[in-house]
Length: 268
Image 1 (cartoon, rainbow, N blue to C red):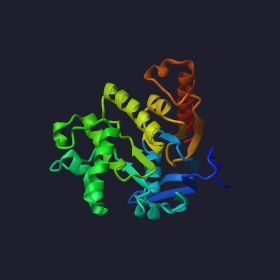
Image 2 (cartoon, helix red, strand yellow):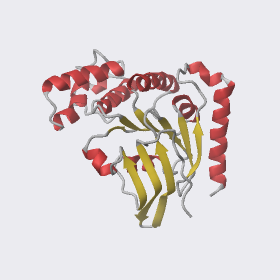
Image 3 (cartoon, helix red, strand yellow):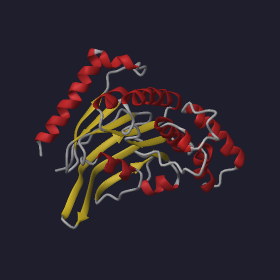
């Protein structure tokens, strides 16, 4: 039976998965990380993936990024295979840890992929200045990672991903290791950045409030084998101050996410 397809408002999806499967072969036998996952992500969407550990949400993101190879079904990014999208630098990827090289300055870390791409020095300078401004780190170009707080390092990591100037940003729990106050601040900044740039963002999180606060759509996933159990279109306005989290509309969406997570566990 074909998997249920979860559509998008966009006629031409930027990211499209069709009946995606991924099975890892291990010494203890096969591990079914994803099964029958179908989803379209439209241009300018902010889509969060939430589910328990081991539900395949990071694996799904890594399939989009050509970091994992599906064993069934298809996934396209900008109408291309993930490999073609990677080669054409169609997306930036932000990992859970900032992953900055300690011997390079913040500016040097952002420049590294641009140097590899063969971009001119003048264009590198322009991009570094632009992305540091986007993440509110102007003036920190010559600092080293160890001179920055954890939250600032993660913003620098986002700036490095933005330096590609791609229309798609893939983010794997970028704020998961930060304390709640810093996380709240970076959530606000990320929403502003998304609003200013119009990028399409796919965002993995374990946090229900974070998923509801950030997203235009929330994808709820079940434990292994990873499947989509619900896709929730957010009714919240694009302008979202932090105190929107106290509103009945926000709490209603959070309740639906929580119920979806419980239902997913019940299916196992």
